[in-house]
Image (cartoon, rainbow, N blue to C red; front, side, top):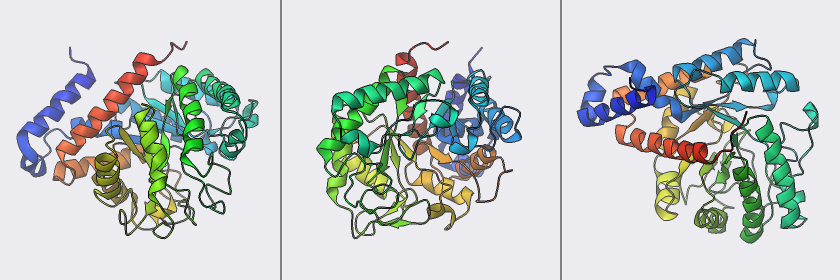
Length: 375
């Protein structure tokens, strides 16, 4: 009997062989198409314990294959016992493949799992960079071990933005950058990534093409870096790619009219396909920053934002909510439905879908092969 992943591969192949016109005319097996799209979605949820409706819904979406992973935010961290119970429920899900369990735990002001649940704190990137690389390795070994003990499988870090604008409200002022030069950033980011790899935890470089020079916070609106961005901000990505340390790259909601056009996660083919894929030669997984940020949702509804991000070249889209006050919608199902509609209508090309799913599977396969066994 074929495993579900094998069935999905056959469905994808049939979609491609039938041609885009056939897909546009009719989506003969919509549930299978929805499961094909599923690995491309990382969803957030509302709730802090296993009995909460939002958590139960996200687990159901995982088991139906509508999403490929879960993002745990600060709003989801109540007691340590409840957190452990939620993660154990996700790990035991009846899923076609082990789901990604992601968190952004950089240290400093972006730390989800520290003294709030009785665990050690991790210093900010700026504080880490004031010490030695050897000390950074020790700190990040402890951080990775902490996440591994909780069975977190993905840390949405490190930040590799250059701190070219110390007054930057989201990077510089919050001490999230290792420094203003690429050499420093690469040294400490390497220590971060290698410590996580030893624990079998995936990492994601961010925020491509560079958030360090911005004067605005993309959580609050579009961050236009046309007047401040420089090609030097690409150096950490180039160097970490050469070292084989760029398993995945997160693209920020950054606009630059002269270099890549509008918001990088929404402008088709510019920042991702041209700059990252062609100019830098990157063929790994590309993930969006949270599409629930005001930089995106102020401009378009969630469904359109999701489709536009895939058209822009993203392999994995991240959505943690559908609106500022909306805590009841089924995030995974709604975003999956929007992407499935686009595939069935021909708005999302099957060739692009095939490439994204293949990159995600390759990344997942490497993680599965190198992860230490966890009880």
